[in-house]
Image (cartoon, rainbow, N blue to C red; front, side, top):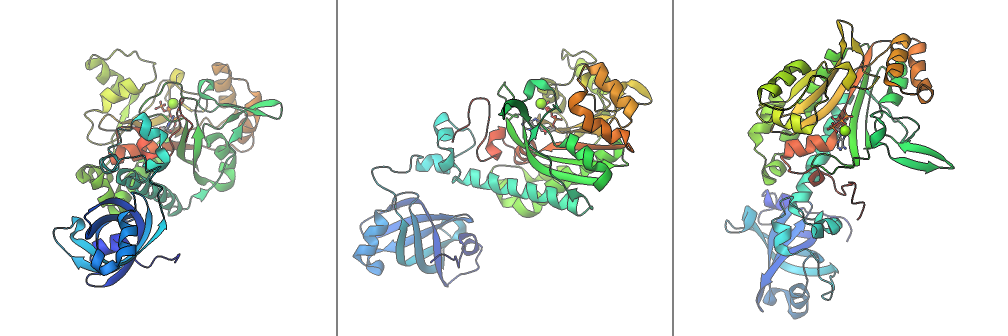
Length: 444
Ligand code: ATP
Ligand code: MG
């Protein structure tokens, strides 16, 4: 009863033509008459039309099926019939049926058939309230599969290159990205924070492991709700010893291209189903990503009439304009020192700048990676901390990494949901995470 022997995706691919199969799944749609009843059955691999006739099933079983509402779970046995007219080219001629989990007619599935079918990511409040049920729509299922492949690609990229997976705590005492987006947590009479990034703790292990990475949640109290910010997002981060900004960028480019390639190999159908142009994804997998200095970006923007002054960080309104016409992702490097936190290393060639990079995705998606070379000598880190007016105390452990055998090193952080949104062509970041968290919503 528990094991599954056949999958709808297999049947639709022609693996069981003319044979008897046993399918376990959920009623996706139904219609019919007193003699013949059609069920579109869904499992995690697809949907298929099943035809049940009163004559073949007997009255009791036929009535059970006929009264099964949407999202009832059932087990059907039947012959696989090749039929061009059926969606997917196959249908099941049902010989027996068993209802496993009925749905009470007094409390039918709240999301309508057509909302299930036509889910396009433009979720209403009602659908967000019913997120736990919305996960069953074809669109969300596809997004979750795409997401899974992105995680797999991150692990394979780093593991194939001798990086060690390494984990940092989620409760921390100091900020990485600045105080304004820190979540405070009461902690036995003290205040601690939820981590914004694995970076500082990764740097501590850098002299031990030299090449390390993680995929873990990061937390940021993003007050303004945007299409690209979550308060809890999954963060792929890496840190590498004996490397400068250029080597770190090579890994950033390598990783993103590997993710795009993996999606083409594993999830072409899902990408096409959510409306993504596969040629674009192939371009992102195959093309090199140009490097552009911050100064050039500012000039380009000023040329486009955008109100920006040298020294400002680029917020999304600017990234959007800049990336609208990009054909491929671009790295922006050498931001002004005053725009970036203390751990970015000043450029020895011109100390007005730091050796950092953001990777900006095209089509107006904007930043997907932030990274760079770290300030790595004790003298320089103390200077940077003091000039920023940051207290040294919470960062003593971080300064120690420099006191005891500091070496050049760097790393980056990639937002998994940013990459999933961009590569799937989603309109909103919450489309690519099952239970999105933002300033307003923590339920369901
Ligand atoms: P932004 O300016 O877009 O808010 P950031 O400069 O704060 O990004 P970093 O601190 O460099 O971002 O974080 C590394 C990566 O983590 C970003 O490039 C992005 O992909 C992702 N990221 C950052 N904040 C969020 C968020 N609130 N929700 C989802 N992803 C995020
Ligand atoms: Mg931010």
